[in-house]
Image 1: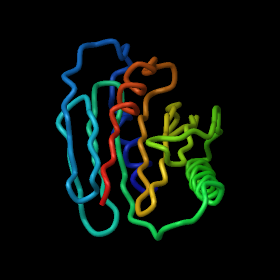
Image 2: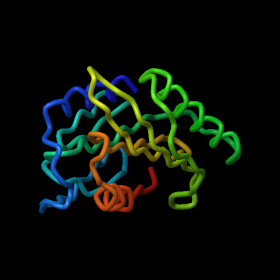
Image 3: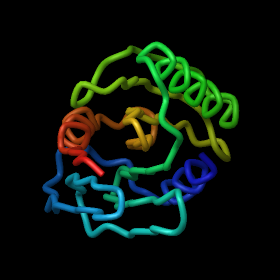
Length: 167
């Protein structure tokens, strides 16, 4: 979660134009974490140890996937509790308000989708997040924008592009 504030700082210099500008979405794949997704620009990958991050930025948003190797957990309810605890920890660390939150599934695995609103250095930000709990890995998809930026289509495209293979 420490990477989330870094993404916010990167966004401090972003322009606040509409997210309807053309982007060249690029496919990305990590063999190590058996994950693929589409990003709006070239991906910067950091695949060190048991936590890896993949990030690309557009003029108005930061797109990030963080993959964390975790012990196997039994039961979807336990997985949902773990994901909600992670969400609550992220909200607390950013002094954020949880605006929307719901349980869902991705590839038949427990997932939560939520939006955080917060401020960094006087700039109001919104983070659209989806956390997915696979048996051996948690995938966090996060799109962070300036408050008021309409990034719904880009968030949907990014979230829907995530595909996880078996390890």
